[in-house]
Amino acid sequence: MSEWLVLTLAMVAACAVVLTVTVLNQRRVGADDDPSETPDVIEYMTMMIGVVYAIVLGLAIAGVWEARGAAQDDVRREAQALHEVSERSQVYPAAVRDRIRADITTYTHYVVIKEWPHMIKHGDLTDRGTALLEKVRADVTGYVPANDHEAQSYQPLVDQVAIADDARNARGQNAGATMPGVVWFGLIGGALVAIGLIFTLQIRRSGRELLLAGLYSALIAFLLFLIWDFDSPFGHSGSDTASVFTDLFPGSG
Image 1 (cartoon, one colour):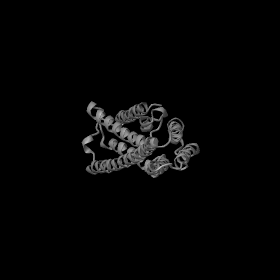
Image 2 (cartoon, one colour):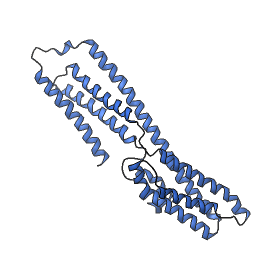
Image 3 (cartoon, helix red, strand yellow):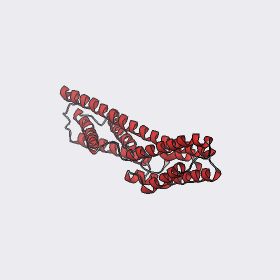
Image 4 (cartoon, helix red, strand yellow):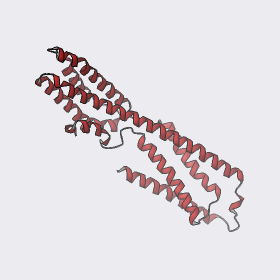
């Protein structure tokens, strides 16, 4: 299901529930009811809970955004390191150079096509991907430089493979969800409390009040969706977040 469709359904559902409850609640209110008699303490509590919940939402969004940024940095570091290995192997003999580049292409193709969907679904890396990267490492470290020029490039190539391996391990550690379950419980519970408190203000069925109630609930639904979407550092479907691999290695897509 498209993420845009999920967002639309969530916002429409939130608005529909709030507006339906508001209309049904007003049918039960007697003609002598005076909405101006709402105690000041209820208005104060509603305001304070709304402010506290807004701060919590802001912290949650900042947390998942920072985690996503760090995960994307690891992906760029891994892809760039492999790209450096591919380019710097130019000084090696054609047979060695072609073997290194072919194994790098095989690895990046597997990462984009096979490992990325697995990582999004299961939250971990595959043994096959690890084996393919080890093959690249063996290609680089197994060659004995034949002259000083090749010897000067040997250690930087080994270092770049180590960087790619480290970035891959970091990618695996960041593959899972960022927010723990207890935080989601607090966010959803807070949303229910924040929306439920608007009914204590005795809102009427006027167009302005219904519009504000609907927009308020839709905004909370949107912010929760935003947190859910960012909670997966590499997205919830597809391999769009692997574009850095396809940019540096066109054959990997």
